[in-house]
Image (cartoon, rainbow, N blue to C red; front, top):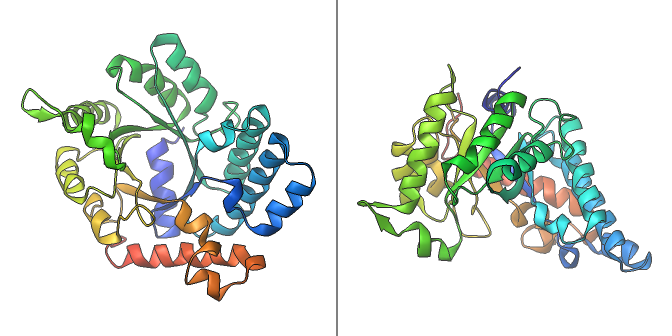
Length: 309
């Protein structure tokens, strides 16, 4: 069985970039052709779920040749009820069939058997059919303590899956809790120490472990600090683009081979048809070309600051 980090790093080196495309569909922002068609079928939760599924699958088809991974945000699908959950599962399987690494952004976290149930439901790891949701990796919240991470770790190791544990998040209010100081260190540094230790214990011969850290692009100094504190931990970095993070901000997350991090962009890519210069360059009916152009531009932007082996 190949580890999650082994599969991810191979995909990064194959595609020559570390871009993750976030799949965060919102009905009001979908291309007009999709809004009109599905609205005409009756503006129900089921029709919106079908729109989200088609939109996400078409994005996957565009970006699969370009990037190593996608990150569907479970909340936008779950909001639509059972039909949305079915759409999420179909989107994940479509991405796996396209050869993409899939990080399901669900931010789960709980105790004991409940955590294990979340893990067994979401984390398929190497075999996309090993779990109902079928994801390679899952985002999790460690607020309740290290023992709540262990069931996720156990299932991930059994199946060749990965985790991304919230450490320093990109939202403006993250410091209310994460910057609190205890025993001379911020809370996020305490969480970082636990995540790094987990990777030291489990990584084997890999330079990084399969249990990554979520570290926001909107805090570039903390990226520098945490890279030094977590040399064996891979980072998932949200906040690039629409939230204000730049390629220069995230460069410190990478090693000399271009490994050590994946950089997420959601709105900036999937809704590129709504913003300049793509809205002028491509008409509303050619939104997929806008997605492709925005993806290539992000790859090029990161390439100016991150060297690949």
